[in-house]
Image (cartoon, rainbow, N blue to C red):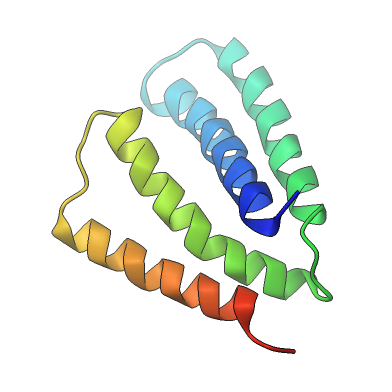
Length: 106
């Protein structure tokens, strides 16, 4: 599986897991929301181990840019709040940084 697909799947798993905790704590959802949240967070951690990288820190750093853009997509698609131009600009900058980290010749 290519790194980008792994990063995208990891971002979805992390955001869904964190949102489950957010929903329980901030939106007064029942405590059972925590169970799928924990499973999702474990899936996120496992997925990041599949990224081909010589160093975990580099894999995590590149993932950060993907996570930020995925979070903005979640904001729009799951929460119904459209990202503004500053969100989009910041996301583009983060993706550029992630691309540099991933594609740099080593």
